[in-house]
Image (cartoon, rainbow, N blue to C red):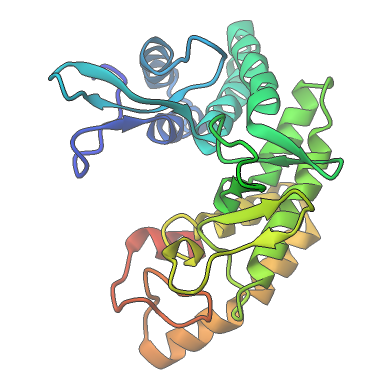
Length: 274
């Protein structure tokens, strides 16, 4: 085991997200050996050269070699790696973990947040720019409980503002759905207004990305007692409950109007909802 988390269903690639989940699992169960092995592989293979963030995708290149194949960051992977390092420092007291966490946290702020009408929002990665007067945001990347942890480590940035704007994004992007469900992707314009494609565009769907929103908000409620998290989960549950009563299952994706996209199920979505 060299510390690389492999996606066997997608060309044996590795992602910053996959590495971050391994780090979190290792630190939660107190397995420092696995934590360090995964961390070393991640730093040696995904660490970007122009900042302290991580390339999101590593795998087999067209020339047959193995390495980074998409050298842009994904905010969810970066923030979870930083969170894992912060927990590792608290658990094991190694100052190196704290120093690595601080460097990542500061670059998340520098490269993965954006000002819109004097308010700062978290974007989907360092590739996101205000193009064609819109900016891409993935609501399921927003993890308010993580930004509270960041605030305790990085006093040079206002991470509690990111907590508030994250709830604002999640609410406003979900409000555009008749069923009050979070979309996989959402866009804001320069005026801070939500811009969503029409219903035929599946970026509006609530599916494998979006369901992580429930996980993140549940964490914020359990760890910090955030009432906005409880209110959101409770407000978006009627559609899901109705679908359960009617079909005896949850679909793996829902359109903006609340209708299921398919009859398929997904274990990961059941896990998030539970």
